[in-house]
Image 1: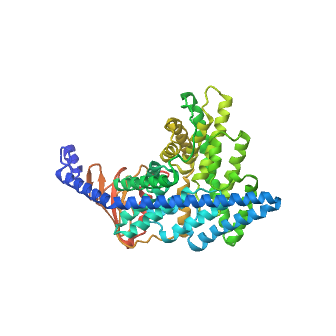
Image 2 (image 1 turned 45 degrees about the vertical axis):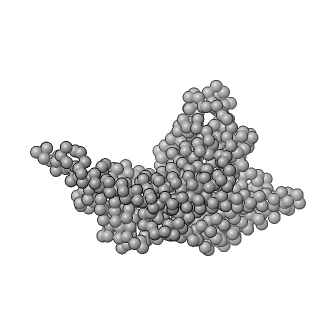
Image 3 (image 1 turned 120 degrees about the vertical axis):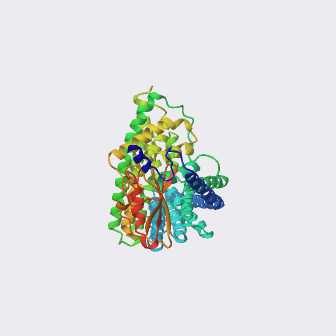
Length: 543
């Protein structure tokens, strides 16, 4: 009886001896050929997306540098005329912030903030994505706001603009919905790659955070677009790493406890960062009815006042990170700049102006790491490592605590600094920071921002055509262990195949899903509400 029951439980594609049948092999070959054809179609498009994303990223960087240079000139001439010159600086900053707020409030609200939650919502088919308005508003609004001094980064906007380019290119050629989504994801990775000169980080960020899809087609297209964008950006902007890191000695094993401590501190700072950011958004939400020029003027006055005394703390903060890595700032000044940048970031992002939190996280992480390294070196000269090493590791640890993308954090730091000897301390600090944030039940910032955006707009999912989704059941997902009839999917949403190992089955109502199953689903336009249910159902713990 046991033997007959075992045979009954075997897949139709698996004979009694457990080896794949010829039917299964043929299906695998068809899947391989289909994937190969998709790659062939997408290759030239990925190259085009990479070139355009690289050009836009370099143009955005040049524009930001020009705006920052203009701000520095205003500050310089204002100081020359005396104390009342600060009013010229206030006017400059107020005008820039007001223009940024005007664009996102009146023209394209989806261009506000970093834009990464909006990209994720579009890839999950939860929000519309209109590249024709997102791209120009993000570019002009980002240059205006960050150029005025908002303590925000260019990386988030570059990611969203890259995604917009991916959608633009997908509209130029006949594409399936799946191919369009892949190009959007590839464009976002290309944007990150061009911003940081980090093609592998662009790929990993898409796989780990944005798309969360390790399908071969997504992997290949994103890698090609990221490498192409990086080559384009380097050709126009130079080959040097984003941050110039000195030649530090390789950290000893005796220093690992200090990197563990740094990871724990970064985890706590990351939690405070996330909660303060949400609190800032809640505050500005309460005053959203104020005219854009009132909010812009008040924030501009604040920026001008800070910039009058500490001009290096404004905008992206790249110079502040360089000074920190070079060890040019004393401990007391580092602590003050850390607190000041933290507050400026909260105010700047809360306004809703275009700008990301990548750069602010790196500034805070470098300062926290250098502070920890200075204290460790002075307290335990024989066991600590070079303080500059702590600064680099601190940037990755803060990123991991806030975003909860540890692999991206490690790869990003290695590519930005060109120092591969830091992998072990990076692993210790990054895993500690992310693990502590998870243990204290803090949610990843982009997940929280995504849910806020969905609640704010309350858009019902809409599909213009039948959608084909391929989803993987993650550990701890709500669908894990459930039968198909228990999923609660509406009519018009059909599970057509479940890939489990080397076998593919057509599920019945009694078929139970398992972790690792790759489910292919067809969703008709009238069943569009099934899309968020599916994405939530396959997501694992904390997603």
